[in-house]
Image (cartoon, rainbow, N blue to C red; front, side, top):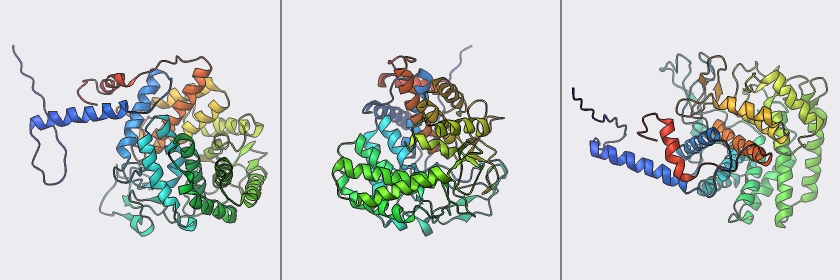
Length: 457
């Protein structure tokens, strides 16, 4: 019995072009694979020593980020999709096809740690251009062409039933006009890190804008806002917003000092001290033995408190930091390391599904605390929730393993890269992993492993 098996091709394209021939299919596939090999091979440095399984996940995340980057502007949307619900049947169906300014710090760090200097510089140029606006006009999110407000106004498409019956389907996002004070700290932190990573970036070109931002924070840090989770019906004194105001002031002072630049340093230091005092006095709950979600709360725990040691507001060994980490593990974390955003909040009902970025924040905080065994356990558990293609969404159902929310989620992949880097460095320093890792020549192995047929990346 003789059988003849021929390749079957499926082509997806848009516009009025003629259908591709089979020869064109093969050529396109070869060119695609060649492009991605060359792109990964051109990294300036790249992922450091880490176990093989982690390295594969990091490479997949690099590919995701590159695919999300807008080729003309360098902006990166939070996700490629809209209206996939945070919980099946819920109305939490948001449009994530926009660039959130708060992603800047994590994006800069991940792109530099993986050696993608060109993409990091293009992204820096994009958000630096936004930062040149009047600080009062800087918005939490922008279209990939830098538009906001009316250009991204939220609409619902009533004629669509939504993903698995979860409606409404939305285009646009009404978080754009919100007051979110954390955006200023993330901008200044991203500039601060970019200057450290890339010697070609001249701080003088953006210094006036940074001064305007820090001055604005001095005058407005004590205002209420919508917070990182974009609560639509309530403004509070959110701990995370105050923390990022402190970051804006602290990094602004450091940039001025390190680069011998003129700035009203006395006023900035005074405001920085005021923010620190407010956070320490009003943001920590003795009864909860942790930092809490907002100043008005006594027991509401929020995973953003894990960022306190990550942003170096307090050292990891501080008793309040350690008790906060323990509280997060006890009250917000599943047995395998998945973390929900908050609990016992009087601003909105409690979370029901773990938020993947928060899980990576916990891993980072554990690494900084030298609690490496648990950090590694949690990290490797979280990796298991990837889709068959190595993608992550915003949330996950720990009971079924179903990914929830828009996908692929940049925040989740950024968190994965940064946690793998933190943990890999710590384990190498501790003698737990070999300094040997994959090299660009091994990329084809990763491509084949992601597809059992080995036919495409």
